[in-house]
Length: 162
Ligand code: ADP
Image (cartoon, rainbow, N blue to C red; front, side):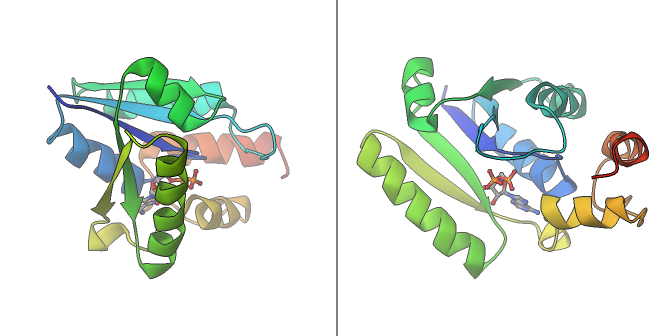
């Protein structure tokens, strides 16, 4: 039973993220979605909020669990006994960034393998940062994120004028 991890910010989770989670869950015996909590970064949603949204969105997939990580991902994976790291790739720009990141992780721990999954063409323009910007102007994001996230974004930008 191969166990894999899918780390990311997921601020907020998009249909592109959920598609990768669903497809990876169809391949691996277990998939751990790792919500990054990096003190240097400013997030719209707290780590607990991001994790809870992903839990709700993946509760029917069975093999998916969600956790928060505030340390180096390779240290976290070592503790969990996971050697496979999944990353989604939308295009060349993502690929060059992800490629370097995978080499860095490999240098930190040579037992970690990064596997890239290509985005579904339907989702390749979806990016959390652009979706937040659109939502902040009350733009329609319903084709980009699940309904639960549409509501959460609406609520955030109603109470928090970020
Ligand atoms: P981070 O901001 O920490 O790099 P993200 O939350 O943006 O991570 O994304 C987590 C992972 O999901 C990354 O590997 C990213 O490339 C991938 N991803 C993001 N959006 C999409 C999408 N629309 N289709 C496929 N993969 C995606």
